Amino acid sequence: MNDSLDNPVWNALVGPHSRFALGRGQARHYPREMAPFSAIARADDKAYADLAMDLPNGLEARLFRPTDEPLPNGWIGIDAFPMLQMVMHRLPSEVPSTPQPVDLSIHDRASLLELAQVAKPGPFGSRTVELGTFIGVRDNGRLVAMAGERMRISGYVELSAIATHPEARGRGLARSLTYCLANRAFARGETPFLHVRVENTSAVSVYRRLGFEIRRKIWVLWRKPAPGAAP
Image (tube, rainbow, N blue to C red):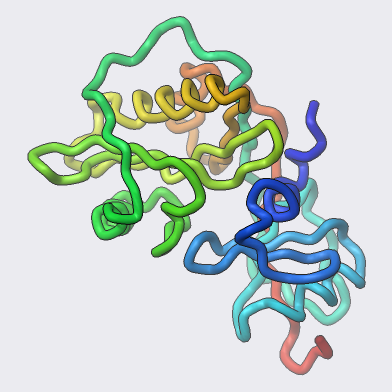
């Protein structure tokens, strides 16, 4: 078991994604137009003080933490929910047979944002495509399915933004794109992982069939400094 996956945002932003990182001391942030996530090295007052210093005014910190940790003094809770962290240790023997995916880039930003708005795969901003490889399937020129890479930790890459347009569902496109990205990750010597809502049982079932296994629950904590709290 790799403990770096217990604090994935922190280990991405002090590791392979350090070039994107904002923040200081014991806290880091992704630029909001890339991903709305922040991180602390550990849950103590010093880390939360550092977190508050560079948090965009009026916005909450969205943290991936091992447990539903108590609120620190001077902070208010907005939301807290568990997600399943799933890891693929090997590719399945059965290869999905669907249309050949196309590689996407910042030049496809408008199409990616349009699909994200319709399919709602989770947070997706104007610069999310810069975080890693993105691939998709087009139908008569329109992007109808996509999948990409988000957090990158030493030896691991998170697969994210896996989405299919409602009119193109039922064709196995998401499964095929996920397989393709996982195959590329293994070829580079990286292990793919992802996060999925606990209640999204249909997605969990698809990922299990692809060979992902549940590693643990990760808590997503939304919290921000109370009005008037000292930074």
